[in-house]
Length: 222
Image (cartoon, rainbow, N blue to C red; front, side, top):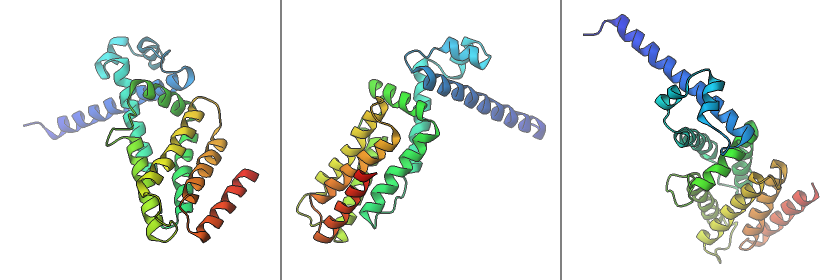
């Protein structure tokens, strides 16, 4: 039977190993953000982390394994940011959903840009993945449309699934423009919300339609 001292020592070693791995992942994140995924190498990571390349292999595996772990962390972080938006007001719901994402991206814009670009190429953010970011975003869009219809904001002449797909597309297209450097995050927000409000307007009740037109004009004037 292990002694309490040895047990505590093992817990400490495991904790230190976890901290060491996270420190190396943070350095990898910085390197990917500063120079892109394609230029990122394990030898450079080892040099920056002050360890040998075999140590990197032992701790993580290959370059793609490190990136997949970073993407996994990113997915978890984004999932938390998207969790439980207020659905009672479709306008407020759209704004909270969008602002939560942008607040997260602003924390490390260069990394998120590089990670999205690389993940798109490697298929790690496949829209069909049932537990992926985009599937979650589509589910939120569907809930927004369903509750908007139930609360009388939408007339129901257009299927909620169709409207939800268009709301999702507004986010996806703006994200691609931002990732490729065509727009900044401020323009990202404006582009997403205008697109979402125009989508709502296609099936909006008269009072809601007036509200949407006002919100669109506010965004255009900014």
